[in-house]
Length: 132
Image (cartoon, helix red, strand yellow):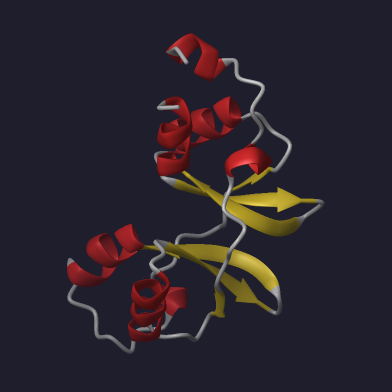
């Protein structure tokens, strides 16, 4: 698949997104988040408030916000999450996801279907698709 094919692809976000999601509330500590990420082998967790998604915490948030600022392990996720949560509709082409990630300088996008978060798509997902 060439770069041109990738940009105008008919492959949709829902075709390559990850549907296994973990979510936490605003008061979950960074220590708890780190354990979940380690045990689950994942790089992002959705943060909810009253069952509604409000942000995301990623492995990069740990490096940039926690480690760099020497924050304690009991810091609530609310203080370091990336918010607001940036989403893309599940029926968008993956080229739209790539464009959004590039323009927003992010590596992970929450995927929505009728306002509900149903998955996550990452820059790695896009690269893996391009490499096929």
